[in-house]
Image (cartoon, rainbow, N blue to C red; front, side, top):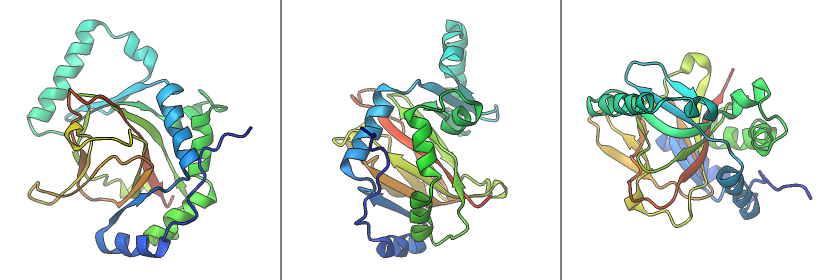
Length: 243
């Protein structure tokens, strides 16, 4: 039996979503997959993904560590990495920590080209999803997308940033959320949008089976996941590109 992994909801009101995106530069598309497909993606992320680590501390280069690289770190190296991330965040510098699986790198480098995450990447770059994004965003030039799977556990966060890589073809950032349907606001992990004074002007719950689309650049962040959060924030994220 073929795994239902990316069947789009045919009932989406694309015209209304496009109006919202044109007005605000962002929109959350709820129930964007059919329920079976969304449940299957969640299952793949929860049980079939070999998680690495994405991290950055201030001006240091962004790092994406595969599981074997994480296992090879000495305890002192792990502690130093954690301290550097926390110190950067405490000082108002850009800082990042969350688990990830770099789907595009894995696909291009042949780590697991026959696995479900490779199939999911192909779906994201196929015409049904790209056309959905074009219809909602009003950007006919969108031709491809990169992707990574992400897992935010307690203590993870993504600091304020703008995604300003316009020269690389980034036009729209996307987040496909597959967190627990019962996700509670106290647990954190919200996608927050910030104004120039640092105030949160809008915040989106990591709602199960919701697709977030946001025009870049615009300032946003993922809030700290609380130490007491009993669930993980699963998502697939990336950028829709015109080149």
